[in-house]
Image (cartoon, rainbow, N blue to C red; front, top):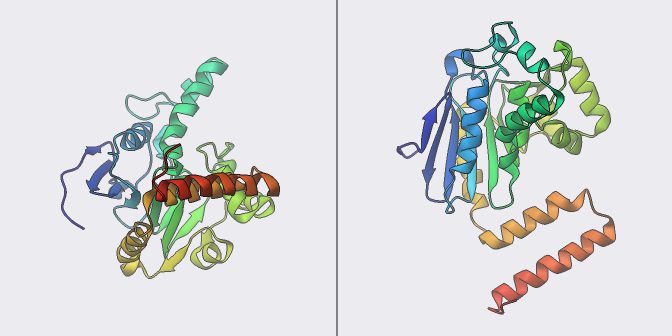
Length: 263
């Protein structure tokens, strides 16, 4: 990768931008990129800081693991330094608790916004919040040592970082339920077979394969990509006839734009 001055480099998150490609890197390898509330704020800030030139966002992680999930210290009565513990959060009124969780989710939602395509490069463990962060991206490239697992239910919680919708959309309700409730590992072969990942490569080739995919995504004109992404994102919520109508509207916009005809 080109050495670039980071736009953001704090709380376990680094954002760099190289023209049309932005790279968000998790930088807590000593803790297997365990996540904290501060890390979530930094991830949300990275999304807000993207310049308009960016078309593809690549999510990477330093070290042997993509992310081992939420920092276990958050489960202690003391919580993480400077952050409320889960017990403190539970004592808040309903509206405040809901708002706190919604703020946490902001780190996981911007990856699917219509003007960018996002790729997660996933190696080693992607557990709980780590699995949900990988699911936040549009596409996933995985190393052959990848191990996905959703452990929240085993801890008496639920996956609440926007991961349930894409998981059900990819693998279906029954398999998603089984994965979440058992907390078992999903290895590379199953991840590829079920569509959880787009590509599995040897660990040594993960960065190069991700870079190749990012370059391929830049080949098509940006406006056509934006319209196509919107069509596909909305397809599940539309009837067949509604989707046909959406296709017609999108194509009309593209034809007029290519012909230089304004609205």
